[in-house]
Amino acid sequence: MNRLTQHAILFMCIIMLTLTGCNYRRAVQDSDYDYGSRQKGDPKILGARMYGSTTGNPKQHDNAFVEYSSLLTREVTKLNGVRSALVMLTDKNAYVAVTVDNTAAGTLNEGGSRNQWDQSNGGTIEGVYDFDTGSPYWDNSHQVTPYNSYFTTTDYHTLSDEMKQTIAARVRGISPRVDEVHISANMDFVNEITEYAKEAWAGRSIDPWLNQFNILVKHQFAGGKIMPVPLRDLKQQAAGTTGP
Image (tube, rainbow, N blue to C red; front, side):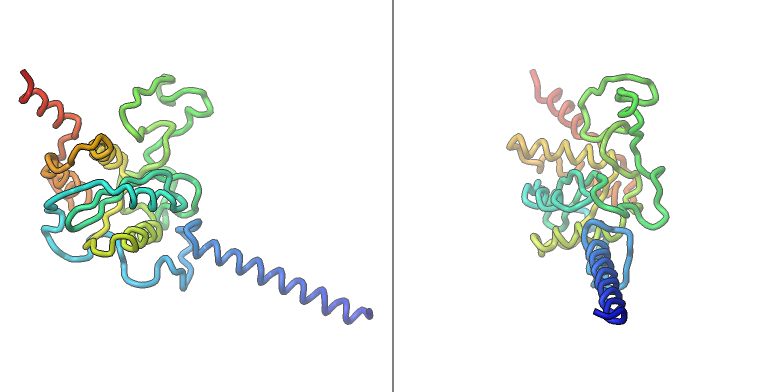
């Protein structure tokens, strides 16, 4: 084999390795491992927006019933970047409460930083729960806490648009009749939706709390001025009025 042939073979090998590397990188960017690359032609951002307010109906959050969807919860939880999910279905909408982990890149919108997460996980190094006080205790009363927890962000707008589009596409693929899909990784919202899900897990209807549920989602997604009453407090009040 002469030198010219050797150089030609080496050049072809380099080209093949480069193309393989580029194809692999593009495949990752197009998948749910990457919500931040924003490459042209990324299938996650093609087509119409599937999440948020899309109907323009000012009464979109006046739901007539609400139920927990175990199927949608499982399917959304399977997505990379999602540590946990809870999905509530109504006659109009799907409401998705998520926590975020490090299994995907770009889970915050462009310009987002670690400072926009609600959590301080420094206590894991120190062997404590509360990094500020040094306390090793957690009362286990909430799914998500400000310390040593999976990630949430106060403003749902800061969650990556690609991530929200991917979640909404998964929801609509299973429940195509929903009008709108609303997604939040707000800590208070996640914890409160967990309380509603617990009612379903216990075999109880959520409908008795529908009014407060509507107040909750309006406050989270539509700028509602009325503060929602925590479901735990509502249940305690109901027990006090119906007890002996």
